[in-house]
Image 1: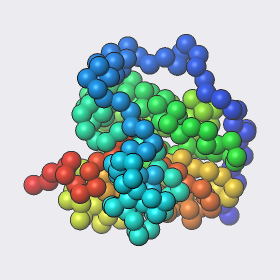
Image 2: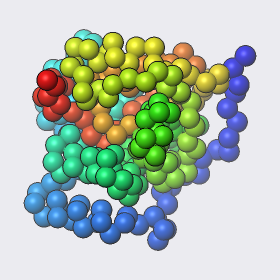
Image 3: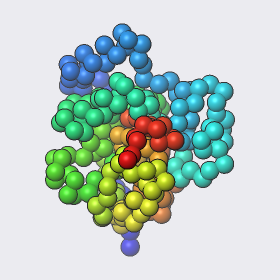
Image 4: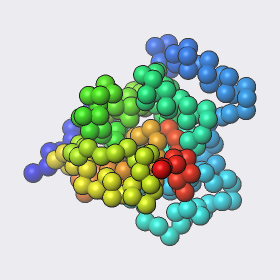
Length: 245
């Protein structure tokens, strides 16, 4: 029998205490990017179904040119930027140069981008899981760090509802046509009852969407009636951002 979730109700409002200020390295880099014309995407600059870049008029309630007519497992998509400089460089620094402060920055900004969602039902945050061998090598799961920062801002709880059961090649190193097969049967959901709960599924980069789709399907089977995705960056839907040999 699935275990029901029992946690304290979330408190409303964002926390803006001094200990929530971003580390200076992030402030410096973001300020420089702003001076050069970069800004976090407005909500009408990307598709709310799949996260692909689509300017005003480039999408409808049914989606954009990349996802219209295609089934989407989740109910809403929130992102900060396309997977391009400078956001791409910050993601790479976070993942491979141990600059963990970027995870806090991404999480705090995603909390702002989400807006007022969460007041109408109990909400939890679930990071996309990492296989234990990769986590042992890297030392941390960047999706989990982002999720923790997001949840702290919103006074939600982070729950590791999913487990990665099979080691796979990173999706960025797999041709788009093979990414779904690459992660097939790689995840399992813990035995919990998510009935009545909203789940925010969090990751650093969306490539083809195969990983997020696999995770969202498991959350749906666990009873989640409202699944939303929050990612730092979204790669080109055609796979142009990750060339493979």
